[in-house]
Length: 241
Image 1 (cartoon, rainbow, N blue to C red):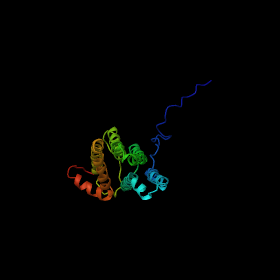
Image 2: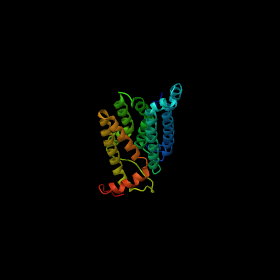
Image 3: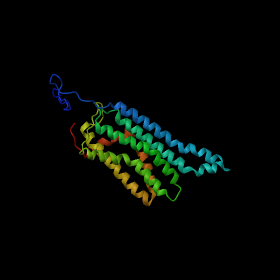
Image 4: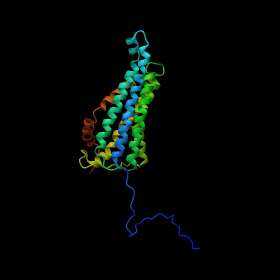
């Protein structure tokens, strides 16, 4: 019987000697579609705690007093909604200029969705404990959910040897190489703010909560923030596109 030829060696060249074809990375539109779905679900889940109050307050003799007593749930809902909606806004401001994908891009977006999906948990903890002796832990874990993406983004960037393999379209308003240098600074700055506020929450949760709120409000207009960011950072970061 003739000896069978081994076929487990991968073919690296085509039939005519040309380089073998490689798999393409996924389209950025697929990431955007999944992201919009995750944002939609997370925003919807935020409202469930508010809806759950209906049966609770409806059986109280003083309806309005019972409703007012649940102010932590409403406050946490408003804060959580602004957080998620501003994140969605910021996400699409940048993604509209994204050109192509790679494993770094796909997984950084994946980590973003991880924290988006976890935000209703952070909001529920904050609402349930804001008026109790466990207030500091509600504020603490809400802060982790709020700033978690900044932490994981920096970790992924470090694992990628501090390189930012992102390509932008030609109409991207920043010089491309300058953007690659300044984006990590933005995440580092946000991470430092988050880390400080999370530590403060252990000792003074109300001060930390005010800091969270100011940070969230400051990120409500990403178009203006990003437009003003590069001229300021370009004074300290030199780059050639």
